[in-house]
Length: 102
Image (cartoon, rainbow, N blue to C red):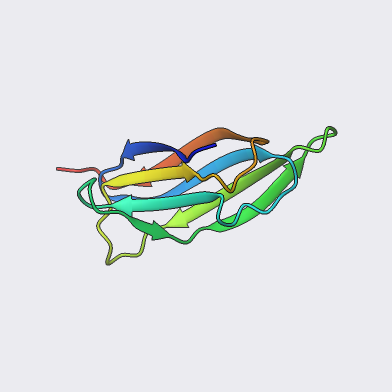
């Protein structure tokens, strides 16, 4: 296994929500959100985790939510699944809110 990641251009990002589907597990250390102003230098950021439902097969719908502090300029978002995460995790949706860039 290796770290897998996705990167989005997110001019003036204010908040994002990531929806994952997973078997019951601890996500801490397995899912990392990071932001960057320039796409080169990254800062890991904290996020809230909430289980919003469970299917009859035992899959949990998990929502991760990050709100950018007002004093942080964010133009890039990176979502990383680390080696610590088991394969029973699927990315469902990523929703981002930001300001219109000039």
